[in-house]
Length: 293
Image (tube, rainbow, N blue to C red; front, side, top):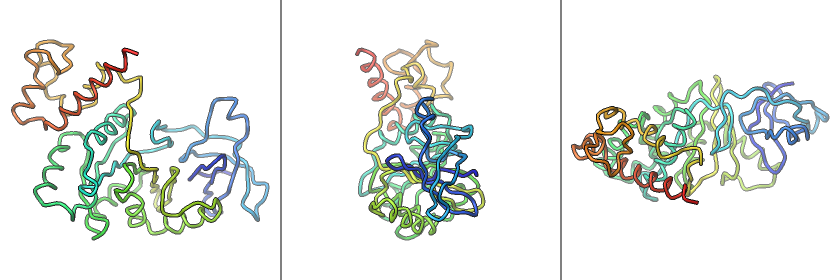
């Protein structure tokens, strides 16, 4: 029997099998010996030892199409990074960190600002313009007023999407608006594991029909770049810089203190948003300082 892991909690994995329901499974010790850990989103083979209680064992993890490090999920087509437009004020530095992380993992990303009803039209326009050349689609929605939800739903259809962002920005609310069955599914699993129903503590996958899946993931307030990203690579993860490629005096230009830098000239000319460039410099300094230790 084959299914898809929708959630993992304290060594228990909840596997959705089409037409049969959700099975609570444990993973065979062989995965630990292989250094392999089942992830939400994994397609797996399982053996059922108690059909009445929906109990089973995962005996094989099928080949992954993709695997994300943070959040730790498998077989993702795209990511939606969600922030509030206000209350709380969005941390664009944290947003840029996530975008770099997704670029590094070669995952298409969609930027979504919730609570658009709490900011003026000018601020909405400003947020869109900052990320207009980032290579990402940008949505402004209001979960409270159900504004912009249908447009967002269209880009999620037929995809497996991971929804990530800080706590308190409305990710779970949006999930339940996009897919009302998610609330029912959360309630069912919460009864089994005796956890709260309204706070996402583990990555959880919801099936929305028509080959559409959505991961709701725990909120985060900090995010560190992987050690594998070095200072020479970072510039490649800012699509806005590509128009200046080859125009700097030095081919190895890091777009920081070097003279005749085409990226700095583009920032001064208003062609690259200063918010994006400022965050690039902060991440560049972080990588440089990290390498000293």
